[in-house]
Image (tube, rainbow, N blue to C red; front, side, top):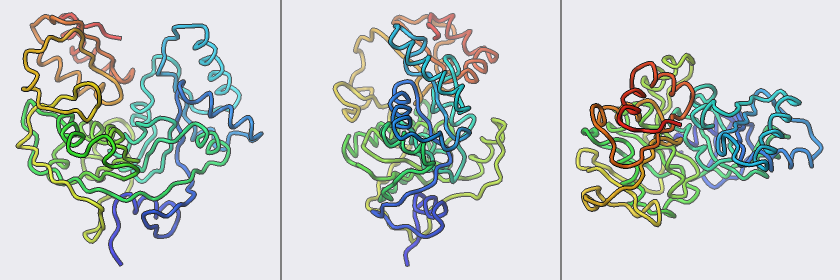
Length: 351
């Protein structure tokens, strides 16, 4: 019998038996997450089923996608979510707390968990060694009623990252290179498992960028090993966890293997019209830029803002620069460290 991939190990532990790729199973969830763009339909499905919320303490609702509200229509959506949270006692983050995926990393997701979200970038938490994936609001509504969801166990692609990233490169350059290599439909319903010396050398913040963007090639989820850095990160953010480490078995079977020499990469950029239209930044050198945005669930963490501050210290921006810290925690850390002072002094607008 062959060994297991990381995704197979997580799901097998959750259901109490070995699972195989392609098998369709129903699995109990550790968390369900939805935001103001997807929660209303999920709540409607729950109400139509006539069932109570199965696990309020495991259901996380976040107002983050259209916040603050720009219209009466959106305000009514926000009000309905607040009402649902009051009535059910679910975990609720109102406007200003942060982006749902950053909040899940800071407060909820842990290694070996199975998490379903009504958002495609739910795959982010795979950097912590969780099986996390996006589902439609209808599936999430049923999950809110049952505490479970159906999963087809995905086949896995192994991405081995050799050597280390050299400044000014970041994990964003690595994942953009991979998007260009695989293509926007190159890994549909696959799990992408990152490993190798390059991943081991990355911070958890950098790993989160990798797993966040696997959905851009159609992947169901992305995973990084659970190692000492993972456990140290959880301790650092006040969530120490006594969990097993996670890595694939030596005999695990993968449908494809991609080797990335991080030392050979150069800064990358994705051009319109699609995220996989990738090229080195050197190919567009000199192109005039009208606006720059630093933030989102992909690159709105403190590490990202710190890099921008190092570049902009003592300088003035020549294009509109908008900075959106991914959470209140990130915002406060950036403020206390002086990072926001540097960015604002350079001409950035912080939202």
